[in-house]
Length: 278
Image 1 (cartoon, rainbow, N blue to C red):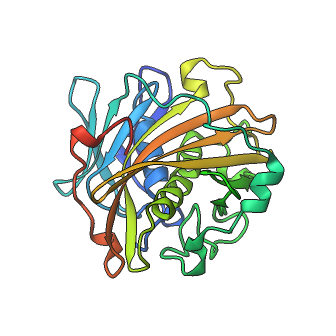
Image 2: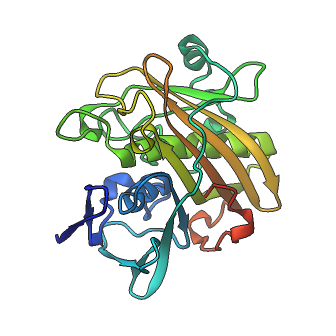
């Protein structure tokens, strides 16, 4: 596969391909993982907008527009767009949270009573250790936070043993959606899909500590709802290292739809609803 290098020195594929392992809904890529792969073409905080479900195991073309933005297409259909974010989400959480509180909340989300996407790479309980990320958030008792522990394994790290950036994006994805959906009180026949995601990684903005976690690090993922506008739900999320430092943060916008056909969404999220999110 051909490669190019962006101004930050990171390798980026000219033809983007999402392996079947990294699915969200059946037959399409996990939105956070795909967003992280697309974001690798740009520097700093990045906003990625998903226009159509990203196909699996299918080469997609990456096209730059000369003004810092890019488009991902397949057979002429726009799949995703990415632009630099002037100010990404702050590397902070609304409230401090202990590892004990996160462990107590894990898996207690109402979503897990009847999960829509049990095979999701990030939050699917049908994925085994070493296959999925197995991040199972739940609401923290008495607080407007959802949380889960996460211990990354070697399969999601680079040659130096550090979690790859797209895996951090993936980890920040589903917890935000679960938090937003539960806070909105969505009915059981309603599903949501990621529409837009903006993420800040400490390593990209010169914050300390800069490095993402290593395999075996005991991390936390925390998420919180931010609001609702019709079919669009917004949320924030953060990845905390073993010492509690915020290593990455995201803002997301989610689209509600009928659970009968959750992979059919392709509705763009208008710029007026971006708010630094997906």
